[in-house]
Each structure stands twice: as C-alpha cells, then as structure tokens.
Length: 293
Picture 1 (cartoon, rainbow, N blue to C red):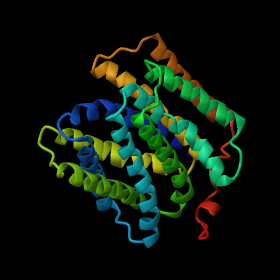
Picture 2: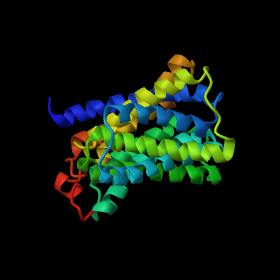
Picture 3: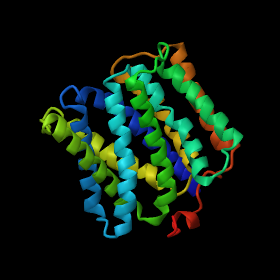
C-alpha cells in the first residue's frame, strides 16, 4: 500500500474520531465548563505522548509552540463563539476551514490554488451548509469569533505542512497538545477558578484525551508528512457528516433529505480534490526543513 493511500485512510479515521467526539463532548460540557474540559482533555493526551517520546530538541518546542497556539486559538474561539451564536451557525462557519486552507496555503507559497482545489473545497462548503444550516446566517459577534476559529484551524493545517517534516511526529504532537492544554487551563483558571473533573466526566476526558487528542491528532500530523494541506482539510471535512451520523445513532437525531444531500456533497468535494488534482499543495520536504524558514 502506497504511503499517500495510507495517509488518506489515517485522515479518514481521524475525521471519524473527531466526528464521534461531538456526542461525547456535548454531554460532558454539561458537567464541566468547556474551557476546563479542553484543558484537561489535551493534558491527558499530551502526557500520554510525552511518556512515549519526550521532545528534547529546542526546535520541536519552537515549532510546537506556534502550532499549539494556533490549535488552542481554534478551540478557544470556537467555544467562545458557540456561547454567542447558534449551533447551526457554529458548525457551518467552523467548516469554512476547508475553504480557507487552500487559500492560506496559496498565500504562503505565493501561488494560486488550482481550479479543482477551489471547486472541491467549494462543493464541500456547500455540503457543510446543507448539513448544518437550518436558518439564514446572521453575522453576530459569535459568528465573527467562530470565523476566527475557522481561520485558526486552517492556519494550523498549513503550518503543520511547513514544519512537520523537521521533527519526529510523536514528540512534536505532544508539544502541541501540551501548549493547547496549558493555554486552555490558564484561561479556565482566570475565568472559572480551574474546576477539577469529577468521576462522571472522567470517561469522556479519557476517551477524548487518548483516542482523539493523542490518537487522531497524531494521525493527522503524520499524514501531513505525506499529503498537502488542501487534501488534509477536505478529508477532515468528513467530520461533520460523521458527527451527524453518530448523533442520529446515539442521540436519535435523524438526518432529513437536505442533510443527506449535504453529506453527499462533502464526499463529492473530497473526490474532486483527491482524484482531479495533483498533490501540488504539499510543501516539499526540502523546503519544510530549510533553516531559513
């Protein structure tokens, strides 16, 4: 099996884990405030990876600090935005990272994204709209914060594509998770006094901390040593479809015809990017490891 194919399988599995987490987190944040949940969850994931491979080189901490800060920004803005806007708006606008990723990647490379890449991300965006949007979008403060979250997630994917080839995957992932955890716990301490998790929320923290924060992000970061940021973003756009399926299965929330159409368009968008474009969005390893970057 070729490495790109393995990477696509890994990204698909990561998207499934991210999507299933929706149900788990939805129940958990009733018990534990969202920022505290993010902090403890990422701390568990970071500690699990640090046991496996401790980062000893300064460069890992430098690049991990940048990537981890973007990862935290995405989750923080998403959480703050969700408190001020509807869940439908939040899901749609967060999904815009699929559109922003090739645009940011093109700016970084000082090149135009391919027509097929733009078409694929556009179709995936329409699918996300049909899947998540139930009413007209009204741009509120919460919507603007969530828009910032989408930009942060897209920038995180692009940054990974530029720096991941420099470092071993496991310790580099551990640093990102540790940075995210530290920032989230600091915000939680200032705002909420850093509430400790109780036994009712521990299963959710362990599941999301190990399987998702450690496992899924590890799969994503490794995959980005093989494929480019645009394909990564479009593959991960499977997440809202998986979230809808898991919600229907576990929470008995059923998709209507519009929702099924949206899920189908996401798959079409993935096909357009994967089958109709060359992987020119991937930054060459030689460029990724250049000291001048």
